[in-house]
Length: 71
Image 1 (tube, rainbow, N blue to C red):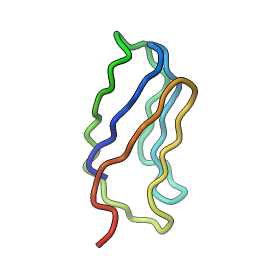
Image 2 (cartoon, rainbow, N blue to C red):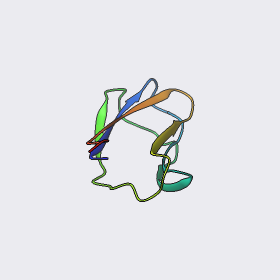
Image 3 (cartoon, rainbow, N blue to C red):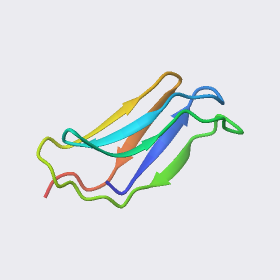
Image 4 (spheres, rainbow, N blue to C red):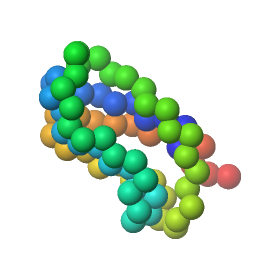
């Protein structure tokens, strides 16, 4: 997982969590943002667990994972 693009709908979006299988490896709690402009978050993560990457989001936000997911 190279990075994620975060797409907030409001300046107070919900939380985002990234799971490797069933293990949470990164999370961002809801925060106050200056704008609703999409922004990238560098990850540089490699999966270690079976089940693949999962991204969960709270209200008023979506996220898109970018990376090499198959070999």
